[in-house]
Structure formats: structure tokens, C-alpha cells
Length: 480
Image 1 (cartoon, rainbow, N blue to C red):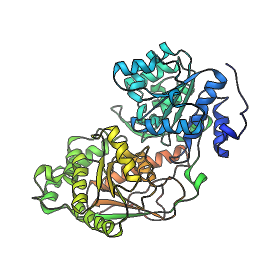
Image 2: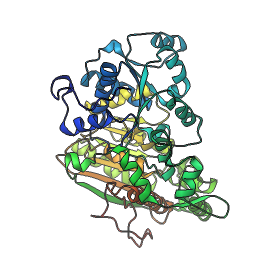
Image 3: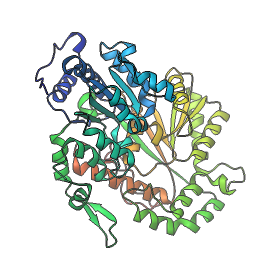
């Protein structure tokens, strides 16, 4: 392959910010590298330029896979930052007949698609376009974070046919060190000859073979650093002031009684699954449901929960000031109840989570940014990437999931550049509940990420408070 070790003129079509020019200069001579920069630092422009470089200098087309919610935004940015015409950049989606029409179009230079579409159709794409020379992956941790999934195995096979690979994410370590393995395996498989070799080098196992901890973070960090470029948010925009506050609430007597029945076993299950959390057992799930969705078990008798009562106070403040509000939660019923509360209080509110179509989410996003909505209630799993809501000065977390990456990315939705005002983040918790253990689980994952790369600041969601019975203080030492 022809190696290009210089760039076209910095001005004109290749005009970029200085550090983005450096990023592009890093991609060009290296066929397989990663961009691990923080959210909001401007990864996209240099990647768009790389698509144009591949076409103009290497006579090759490109594939860009990503969460479906990013498809429209990323296509717009390709057209903004390159000389490609609209008919040369296509989103591969729709009915089989519609996809066939796109695939047979020789004018298309860049194909955008969701992760599933790539996993299912990459071989067919190469049949029509054997000159595909680059596969970029936006937010790779969301699509290809697990080695054993069929989708990741399909990604491995595609890497034998597509010579250039550029994964993008600010969260390569997504709770577990082995979430970095698929990316490293494609970039340079000789570090770890197999997934099991990676596990043996980096994991601690209990007597039954379950992973109970991680080790050798420094070696993994050096490998990642060698094959990636990373810009921190602070490097680009400077330190951003974020004010965190815990809102401690009480369960109702009936809610507390039901919760206690499941708490002991639930905490044990959470302890056993602390490295993942996605497989929490029945008791842990039931505890969380009782806290978040007590109406499902007829525990409220139509009365607001402790968190709802606190939320009504915050909603009233926003109703008086007219300032927009962003609310995150985990459970669908919890978020739908929140939407109803906000609407009853007079806030124009919509829901974004996995039950809402990508088209509808895009419409809600536009209305929120245009000021036609006062509030969005969302799950961090769905809305933690792709949304630019810098007009928000207050974010509320009713509940959080087990991923430190989701919390960080969710907060970043309101930090998309240099802020004029501090961002206030309110974290709700029930006193003497599983909420505190979940904070500790997330803190532990964040600490593991920091051990791999010290530029990731450690979270400290836990709080010293006799009432909630947790250990770690929250305050000036809590960072994003």
C-alpha cells in the first residue's frame, strides 16, 4: 500500500484545528489506530477528513458504523467538513429493496450504518464495493465491547478484508478491562494471542473461574497509548466547573418494608456481579424496582415516592425560572412517571429511551435544542452519546446503572464546549439502600479505568453520611 506521510495544505478543504490536523497526520501512516478522545473534543472532523483522504489518495471507499441515533448527525458532519456531495454519502438502512438500491450505487464513497447492519451486511457491501479500504467505528464500546458476541466475531472477520480500522470512543475500558480486547485484537493481535490469554494476564479468578478483579493495568495502558491518540476535555476547553449534590430521600413505610425483604440477597448478588452488573440477580433487580417503580407492586396508593417529592421541588424551581432541565433514570416506568409529573407541573417534556424510535428521538433532540421543550427524561444507556445539550445548567439522576461510562457520558451531554455557567448535577438516592452500593460499584470501575490511563479522572459518587451509611466523601475531589 502507498504510504502518505504528509498532509495536503492545512487551509482550504483540509482546514482543521491544529490538534485535529495532528490527529489526521496520526491516522494516515498508521492503518489501524484508535481515537480515544473525550466526548465533545471534536473527534469527528478529523475522521471525516480521513474518509476524503482515503478516496482521493488511496482510491478507496469507507464504512462508518455507529449507534443508529448518530447516523443523521454524522452524515451532516461529513458533508460539513469534506468536499463530498450529498449523493456520495449514504445511510445504509431501510427495506431490502431500499438497501439494494444503495449498495448498487457506484457514486457512494462513504456508507454509514448501525452496528447490526454492519455485522449482517459487510460481506455483501464488499461484494459490490471491493475497494472498501477503511472501517471507522463510532462509540465502539457500545457495539463491539464483548469478545464472544456474534457481532464482534463478525467484526473480526471483516478486519481480515478491510485494511484500515479506526475505532472511536472515550470509553474503551467500559467497566471491565476486557472491553478493550476487541479493539486491540484487530489493531495488533500479537500482544494477546487469544481472549483467554488476555483474561489470564489481566484477570483475577475465584475458585469457580469467575472474574473477581483485574491486574496489570499499567501494561494495558502502555499498549493502548502506543496505538491510539487521546485528547482530554480539559486539554481542549480547560477545566469545567461542575457542582455535584446528593439528594437523600426516604422510602415510604410500605416501600421500605417491601424493600427489606429482598435487600440482603440483593446486595449479595450485586457483590458477586460487581464487575458487570448487567447480570444482577432477581433479588437485586427486585430491590431496584421497588425503589424506582413501587406503583408496579401497589406500594404507593397513588402517593408520590420520596424521590418524586424531591423531584417536584426541583421541577417547581425550573417552572419558576423557565430554565430547561435534563433528567436521567434507569427504568422505563420510572421515566414515564417522571414525564407525567413534569407535564402535570407545566413543563413541556418528552421521553428518550430504548422504547422510542430513532426518528422520534431525533425530533425530540431538535425541539429541545430549539427551546420548544422544557425537559427531557432519558435513560443514560440511550442518551449518553450523540446529543449536544449545552444549554442545560441542571441535570438530575433519579437512578444510575452499573456503568461508570454511562454516568460520565450522560453528564457530558451538557458540557460540549466552554461553559459560561457551572453545571449542577443532582444525584438522588434513597437513605440506607442499594443506591449507595451501586455508587461504590461505579466508583470501582472508574478507578480501574484510571489505573489504565491516568488522564481519566476517577469518579467518587459515594458520600460520607451517617444517614446513608457510606464511606467515601463527595465534594471537591469528585471529578468527571
